[in-house]
Length: 487
Image (cartoon, rainbow, N blue to C red; front, side, top):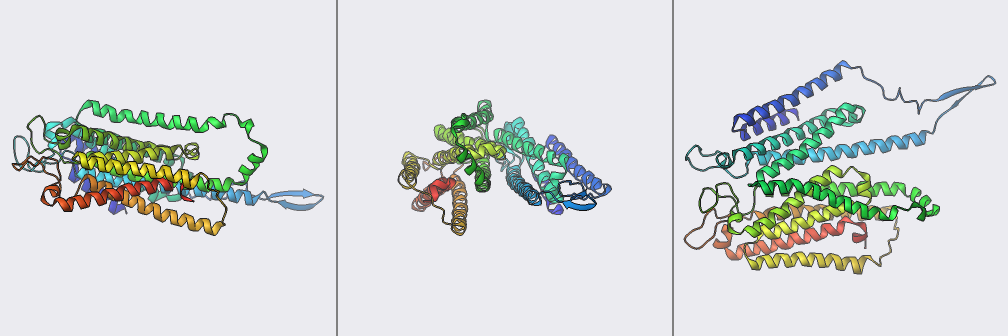
């Protein structure tokens, strides 16, 4: 694994760096990370191994003497065992969350760094050569900012993976290293946000808009949390019987909380992945030259259909920022317990629907078709809630039946997330690519090539892909809440 990570770092540094600032910054970050890892390993070898059980006084028998008779009393070992199992389970859950975050961050930042936003020159002209980044000549500062933020997220995510591989389950015993992980998580998410804002935008106002979305999503979460907690402002309204019943069902509540957290994290991670890629590589492609009011590296769809592109960009940005905020807040049990993050993920999914509808369509007819599909999805969810769940009485069918239901839900959810991910990417970047310039036959730049060469084949692909995407989104919406999928 160490050789694997070294290979990734070397390939990233050789394939992305084109200027002195990027080369120096990447080299310094990589050297700092590996120096930190070497120091940690040296410290581990120098320090003596400690037996964690020797210092725990809770499990140590207490000897008492009564009239010369020695009696040994033992604390509540069962309670200590449950506490230890709970702590171990929480630690394993956190390690899974961190590894998932590191894996997804490494993958998207690696690909984004090698496929620079704005594309590359395919010919020699002026100060550039074939293979040079187009944005280097047009917007060099913005491209440099993208590389710095993307490299920060890439290296920080590699450090998270290294720490998890080296220390494993011992991280919680090492407080300093545990805090380093949180610093790395913050660096990864800030790096992704900065890289998205610098790589997907071409103007200052859109950059400010993307950054301000963080505050808007946080305000939405706080508003939903306040509405969810309004009924709990008066604890005297709850009877002692209800409180005792709640204590008896604490284990079931904990399991439900862990399931909800895993679901939210999985959805947020995949949504952030596809929206990050779509924002840096927009539908319709980018211009390869200057002319007619546009510059090389700018999105073609922005010049040919500005309203459609802005609708795509804003919806995609909302989904991306909402995913990042949810990943940050997923460890807060209060937000998960009140289903606040699930509500944010529903907002995320509808953002994906809007981005797909705006980014995959080129004329009014297909736009109406996709929006009608989205409306049917919403209507179906509402009908399902009204007629199937409101009058449903959830009965306890035993642990075996509940486990079978949970396995079926996981299979359906994995399939729905897989289908939604690949159909979203395929709808925004269809097979055959895009026209990069207008031609004499009346074809417009930014339109799919397959639409003109094989119109029937393209329409079959587009309609089937759109149906699959919308059905996957509706299935995910129904699988979020047990009250929706249990009936």
